[in-house]
Each structure stands twice: as structure tokens, then as C-alpha cells.
Image 1: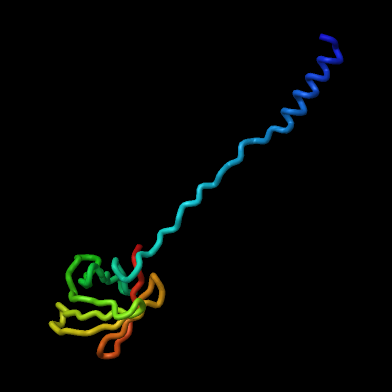
Image 2: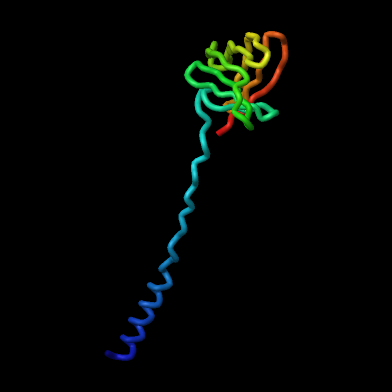
Length: 123
């Protein structure tokens, strides 16, 4: 091979190698957890008491001993309003509670005696 041809081939090879790019890293984005629709699932109040909504049944339990504090039923009156009819195991009384769905992760509730509290969804 002539020296000029060898230099041309080497220059062409160097030019092609310069065009190669490093492999790109593709970032894998983890989907964020999506809150379930409606109120089904577990909710917690500021004191750590857990309320569970499942298929029309409602219960409230302590987190330390899992003692049942209240149970009952619930119905979605509208997509943003839930009505709970519950019996307190502690006080042996029945009570109606209306809860407004403030966001997919927060319920703002009012008892039939006017007491107010909020629940936050546990995911």
C-alpha cells in the first residue's frame, strides 16, 4: 500500500471513530403510587388510630394492640361525601359521621354531635 493511501485510510478511520458517541444512559422513572379511588383502604387520624374502609364495612382499631374501638358501615352519598354509621365499642353508642373527600389522601369528618377530625390515607 502506498503511504498516502495508508494515511488516508487511517484519517478516515479516525474521523469515523470520532463520530461514535458514548452509549446514553436511560433513566428509569419509577411510577409514583396512586391512591385508590373512593375511600376504600386504611386511614389514620393524628393520634395514630387506624380506620379501615372495605366494601361498605368500617372499623377503627388501635395501632398498638389492634383493639377494635368502633365498627359499622359506610356509603358514598356522592363521590365527595361519605356517610358512616358506626357503633363505639368503648362508649356503647351509635353515631353518624359525614366525611368530605378533601383530596385523594384526606377526609375531613364531622360527627352528628359536631366534633370534627381529619383522616389521612395510608398507602
